[in-house]
Image (cartoon, rainbow, N blue to C red; front, side):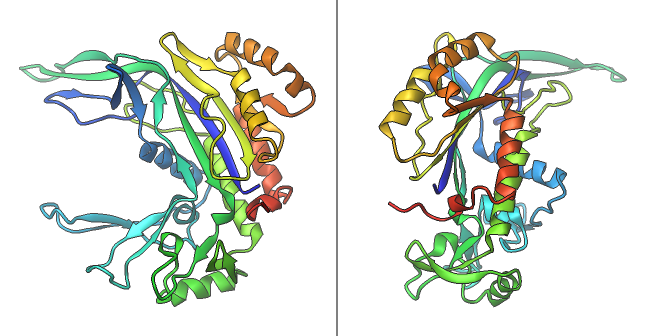
Length: 351
């Protein structure tokens, strides 16, 4: 296997975890319009920030961010150190740091091995507007408002395991830039070598690659951060748990996600389709590795869980599908990775 494909669901109850552009004195939540109906969402950028913060909480230093440019200048930027050898978040989440001019040697970038979709409401949901007044100690009260909502938000994700800790070197024609350490960044190459990195051909390009122990450690860090996911806007007024209420994961050979329609929705709300899971697994037979790991929090839509477990009773009985708490599933897989049980996943699967 080479990828970990999945879909996760975060249940928001009377929350406003990701705000959009405000209007006058009213803070608006982000939403998309689908077939004329509002679907609140949390951007992938916000969720990736929550995950990065969770890694920091576990003692992993984040790549420092430097702001470049003046406030009135449209060319203002904010860059991380762009050092994926030292910082796991630069490795896992990618970056782009542009030089002063086009084709500047200081320009460096890495696309993210961790791909995440928009965490969008599975069903239409019109946000509620809360009206407030600040009257404490002022002669004229100040009026303000903000939106919040209750919804189940779902997003697909894909983790390209072989690319973790793997950095292609650009050829003379520039091929390899999406993951590259430039030839000018000799210090990073030397740092990688000091950590035991070797050079090899990766997906047709020359590459520097950290030892598998480092790569599996970074993948485990990501899963552990999702297992204790927290964050979001307006926690003082609308505190809410952000640990996924439902998550489904499967190791997969190709860079597609067979779980996209397993967690879905209709006009009545959330739908979890055990029959869709069975059909997808049959269609992709030979392209995935059991078990399919399902994390389902106790008390969350127990009615749907009963139906799902009935439909997938045979798969659950033979261990093809395992169902447990999301935290248990994520931490268990992270522990197995750290122990080297799945080192084969960190190399591209033979076709």
